[in-house]
Image 1 (spheres, each protein chain N blue to C red):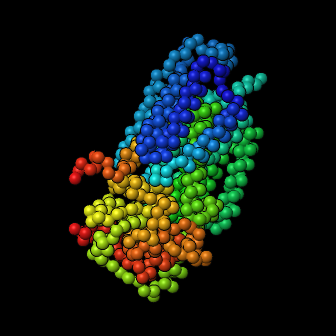
Image 2 (cartoon, rainbow over the protein chains, first blue to last red):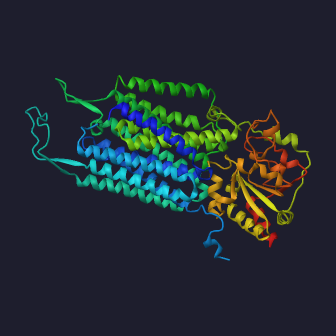
Image 3 (cartoon, each protein chain N blue to C red):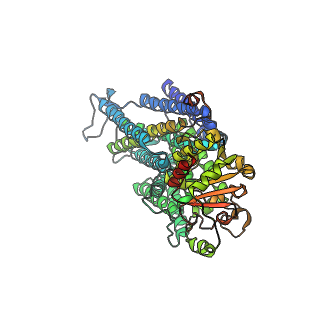
Length: 100
Length: 506
């Protein structure tokens, strides 16, 4: 891909991001931050490439360290988002009513 | 990066699908009912991205004859064949495994009140990972397909990194380093390891601007000279500016800071995506970058302060307790007991609860929900009113109330509930202060003038839970609500007070 093609994807994605994020309900802003945290760790792609490449041992170990950091974020970020989202409940659900 | 083989166009397609999954993940957050599905899309997208990378970048090991000429220079252009380097595969899987164990165990254990710290800590990891990846790309550019191998007449061959890639790499490492060090400071402040008060260095604006200018100049110079000192100086200066930028910002401005760092972590990912020509990283970077920027904007608007004034820092630094508290000390106010509060609320038709950071500190959300349940049993209608900047991060109060099993349809945002205070019998303010201060509407000289506030004083009675009369809010201004005829101050620890009210309601 040439630079202009990539730049096009980037610019369009910024617009998509703008509209998608404005539609997020304020009640879910904390989960939004947690999940954006998790997905920004897609940087693990770069870390995996560095970790798999032969040629420079230092670069490889930097890559592996980055894989650990990004994995913490990915697993931790998605897990904590899941935990938070599971807590949001609506009023008067049948399950809640059954307690009475 | 590579030639358009069937393999690489498959990979490009897979990364695009991953990017679309991430868009759907955020899209799902438009309502709590679709949010869990959205989160699953996020996980699917990440799995696609990781598996694609693992498959297309299998670590290989050269096996066979390596032909050298008499002087020792490798003469053959490639090995006879390559086989999978299983040791490296194992190392990579171990690295993912270590991350998974740490990540999941942290996510399971963390208390909901500690969520702002956790998010700041996670941001710092993204930043550091970006720095490490950029450094790896700098040290081994051929592996990333961003360099041409130059074979000079004399001396060993060396890699010349593409000029565009140098800019992307320079910006990537700079943003990553700023995200890392800034998030570490934000974490220390939120976690209480470091005082919430702003730390003001003399001449900090000049210093910060100077360092920022130096970083930009060095990134520009990096395109002409790829020597190590340029790369590492950019990295070091960026670490420094991250510290310098966040140190002067006070505790209650952290919602803006955390959002801003969220945005930076996205831009860092995007910059690395440009380096790697990877659409999943670019789409994600743009999404996260805009997400953080919009959240920062929402937070700033909710405080009626410009983004620049928040970033410049120093707000709430001059201890306003002297100016506000002392002048007002002789004004009369009424003190109530838990029994009075319980009686007033049980007789009410509608009670609106206004939680703030103090509720989080006191961990009072669970007992608060118990109180609400008791009131509902008395036939009282209970609602919650959330100010956008209540707490230490966007949506902080909503998560805590959700944790305490408060149904989300009883929780209202400022603009949706503000008109209702006039028809409300009791406004129950717990751990919030500045966000209820009517001075924001009337007093042009007040530092919080123009900030949208919750009109609690319009309720028939205001019950204000506060530790003591002495303390002022973050903005360091006195709150007129304390001294109104319809206000009753409940001076105690928030949790203790609500527990007593619950007992009295029986």
